[in-house]
Length: 445
View (cartoon, one colour):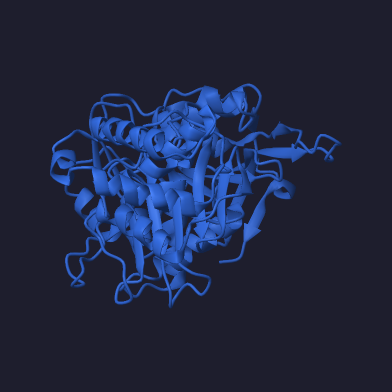
């Protein structure tokens, strides 16, 4: 069973008849169909057959409906019998990137970067649980009181998270995240996330094998930018991607995709991100891309970056560039290897070259708020030099965030590293002969 609806996208969300009418005709439909025959049909043919049978039932028994009401009733009943009920039209809507069900009476979606509540509801908590069970069964998982949480990637690519009572006090909660298509950096320029000068700089960093950390809060577009940056990696290099849920869509030919695995129902068989990072080092990678570091694997990633795997990329959850460095230090300490904070600081100073900070604004737009270079060495406090930043203008009547990207000179040592790699410094930035102390920020580690 595919999660993606096989119906035309629709923005109609309010049913013309109550849930009782849908339940009645769902029962009548199930009485008339041959389940054995239905199981032998392909999914698309199964839907067509159910719609035809239900159409005959309505014509025979009523009620009298307009053409649009009849079509909508048929769609809703078939969705209940075959698909995911009220969620089907949401999954068919390409503008929706996240579906959030907070109990049977509360459905929210994210559309174009904004969250809105829809006039939708499940007929009962039992119906919601049936929908949840149908979803998790596609990945051979179960959800019940002994296993009240499920986090998984579905065969069709969506990431689903389920948590039910007694842990969820407001009722069974379902979150489905749908990943948009891969954007290129020029497309992100068109969306206002960065500008041409930043593209030139980031391309130089990637080709010169700088180690990049993409930082930002939830929903700021870290994976989207990471995917776009990966397109700058030369096609002949061997790339290994490591993720909790496979979201990256690299276009190069020599790509090995690794995905972690949760424990099975007996609590066995777990493969962590850390296991995969360690294993990847034995696979002769030219570059390692970690979808997100969130635990002890951070230490392994930092060691890989500083011991011959230059040009690697990773994302981390943090609200500022300074927070990103401090979070890397904290996450690295979560390893079972007891390493002093000072030694972790050495690792970060040795491994990380660039932090790209993302932010999400009130109008739903996502932008690169800052690109900073890590210029500290050894056990110094983290010292970063911003080379570009987004400067917002006061919010106008249109409630749209406007502003401009400010570009600052690159430190001489960074320009020299680009020069050795035969990568020019973009003219919009230039080179500072000495680090401007006033333009250098320090993060206490």
